Amino acid sequence: MTWILRPSTPEDAAWIAELRAEVLRPDLERLGRYDPVRVRERFTSAFRPELTRVIVVDGESVGSVSVRPEPDARWIEHLYLSTRLQGRGIGGAVLAEVLAEADSRPFKLNVLQGSRARDLYVRLGFVTDSEDPVDVFMSRPKASA
Picture 1: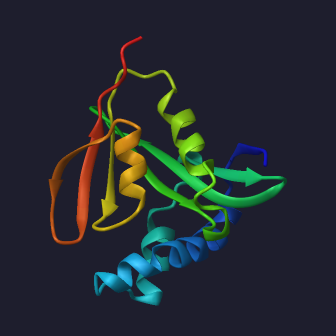
Picture 2: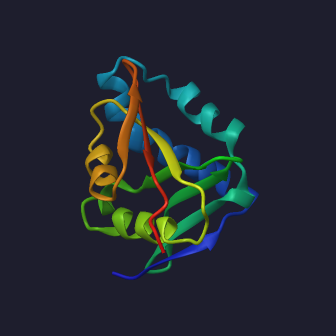
């Protein structure tokens, strides 16, 4: 199974919003926070195609990842992968590629409490900075060159 990252376009917003709803639904329902309209609106209101890349597997768009630069960190956001492709190493490989990009700023992200994705982030060097009942905020220092 081969994957690549391609630049996102404004036309990607609708299907990524649907993917987000599908991927986050189990965790949001478990946390009592699932709202089928809000889960999509939160993505479409924050979507910035210039910061987003689409994960393409065997020619099919199946996921996304965004990196939002801030003065003191780079925020990894909107890392979604089709549920039928999860657990095959694609998400980890995509994230490893993003983490390898040259920049002196650390990475930050947040993940829903109880999400399996947290294990992936820990394996890739993220540590927990803080938590609340819904989110876990994590960071990863920039690796030494």
